[in-house]
Every structure is written in structure tokens, then in C-alpha cells.
Image (cartoon, rainbow, N blue to C red; front, side):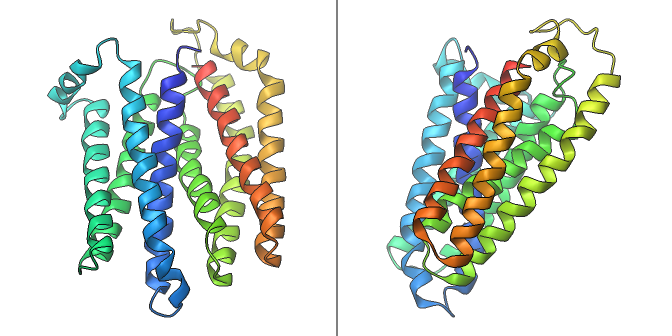
Length: 267
């Protein structure tokens, strides 16, 4: 699969942004729930590492990685240029917030919140790159919903596993359940809309709807895995059953990998 670097890059960066947003919300509860504060720094370090790896992997998609800076020349007209800039700003803000937290200096909460906001803007720019491509299966709001969903699902699934607060676990269950269901409801709308579009645009693959039809089994299986993962995560989170929640997290991440594989295969 020639789009493998993009698959890994998008999921890693979106997961990192999701972790940051989840940690930002958790930081507000740190003053009331002492054990939450001790779990913030490891989470911030993990978000930094995952985001950094994502940006490194993204260069593998380029024929000459050292020429990546050339993509910054058209910020006013290129979603790719904007995405690179916001991704860099996101990682810089998150890294600085982590350093301040580690050094026990003030200002880390504000920087963490800023990193989460910039990260969401970056994911929006990332989605726009594909929504403006000449691929009928990507030219839909479903692309943005898919990417934002990955932010919340991966971020919550990864962070909640290390949290001990019942309130935090319940929040993660609500976030994941809502996002899985919203994306699931979006699927028939997306399929109806793209079927009605003019799909005569020549791109790779030349027949994206036919490619989607060929992958319908994988596509259906990916949604089944996501729903089962959601149910396991909800059951484990609400009952504080760590094993069930871990299984749910693993299934949710596996579902995201499968959905992203289908996304790039039909584009």
C-alpha cells in the first residue's frame, strides 16, 4: 500500500491531538482529584512522542524528505502548507507545556489548552486536503467527521486506560460512544451522497466507488470491530473493569486502522 506513511501519520497525529484535548479537560479536574494530576505528565510525554513520530513518518511519503520545507511556500492557497504549519505549532506548544509541567513551572495548563486548540485546527486542515482532492469518495463532510472521530476515540481510549478517576472514565465512555454512533449514522448519508455525485473524474483509483464495493467486507468488518470495541470500553469503564476496558481500547484502535485503510484504498 503506497499510502501507508499517510495512514500512519494521520492516525498518530490525530491520536496525539486527541490525547492532548483529553488531558486538557482532565487538567481542569486535577485540583479536585489529586490522583489525576500525577497522571498528566506521563500522558503529555506520550502525546509528544506519538505526535513527533507522526510528523517523522509523514516525510516518508515524500520522494525527497529534505524538500518538505518547499511545501510551506503557499500558505495562502494550500491546505497542505497550513497543515504543516499548524502541526509544527501544535507539537511545539505541547512540548513546551510538557517541559513546564516537568519543571513545575506555571503556565503549562494554558499552553496545553493552546496546543489542543491548535491541534484541532491542524486536523481540520488535514481533512480539507482530502476534501478538496479530485476523489469522489473523499469530497464529503464524512472525511472531516472521520478524522475528528479518530481524534476523540484514539485520544480517549489511550488516556482513559491510565486514569484511575471514575469521573474521567465516565467522560471517556461518553465521548467514545457519541463519536462512534455519530460516525455510524453518517455512513448511509455518505454512501447515498457519493453515489449521486459525478464520479467521472479521472484519479487513482479510476473508479473509487467500484473500489469501495470491492472492500465492502473490510469496511463492514471495521465498523463491527469499532462497535464491539465501544461496547467493551463502555462496560469496562462504567464497571471499572480494567481488562474489559483494555480489550475495548485495542478493538477501537484496530477499528480505526481498518477504517483508515479503507479510506486510503478508495482514494
